[in-house]
Image 1 (cartoon, helix red, strand yellow):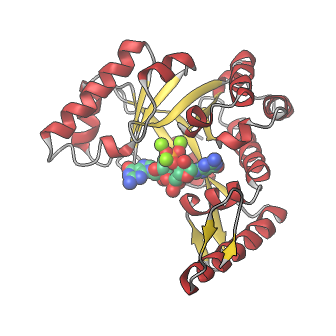
Image 2: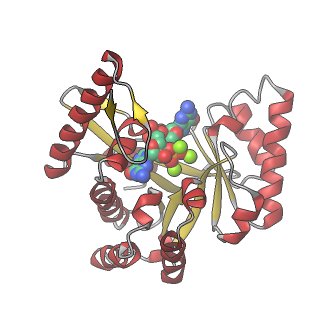
Length: 271
Ligand code: C2E
Ligand code: MG
Ligand code: MG
Ligand code: MG
């Protein structure tokens, strides 16, 4: 038996767990190297206007092509958070997204930010410096936060959100409908946009109740007066249903997968 971590949880090491931990350690070390060499890339997924189908923005998504092949952000973001690397990772992604965004003047650029990044009291100030460096207008940047930020709910995270908003940066709540975020919290944080989680869209073409829940959720967010994006749109039915339910922006494989900056420019932007 061995003690592990903080508090008084006792963890019994099994061969399995040991293997898992050394796997984590390996990932951590590889991630440190990748960050050192600035090997992480950014993919851009179009966000389209629900009525016209025209591209109106992009979401920047971190990509890591490790020596052992691509690793999903669902895997390496939590590793970065646990290892204290998320600040460095996050600022590399923000810088790359803003640098690229400054060349695409017609598009809104959305970047995912971990709640842990907001606990740094220099976060908003550092971001402002990056925006200035690239002459990027703050209102063209949207920071996407998951409800982790509502749960952790630290004073510093709240202050960071206020500072972002005071700078003119937009703040969106991501993955709404996948967890505990409440109607009250939408109002309390005065989010500029709410993105509905893809689980709300999955299967609506086969499940009438799921379709009703999606429509009701779109209505609910509209009723609070916040613009809604539905993500995870994979077919024409889902796109049309979300549009008719009152959603103004859509995102998903039906329109495009996340693309490299070159592909995005080639396929969606006029030369
Ligand atoms: P998210 O912010 O909710 O991003 C949407 C995810 O859904 C992306 O996965 C995207 O590729 C995927 N997606 C888009 N359209 C569809 C679709 O039609 N169907 C399905 N099934 N999936 C679709 P990805 O790129 O693997 O990212 C996963 C999550 O990792 C993101 O979820 C976000 O929470 C996190 N993440 C990604 N990049 C960053 C980053 O730079 N910083 C932080 N903190 N988190 C990031
Ligand atoms: Mg997102
Ligand atoms: Mg999401
Ligand atoms: Mg997500």
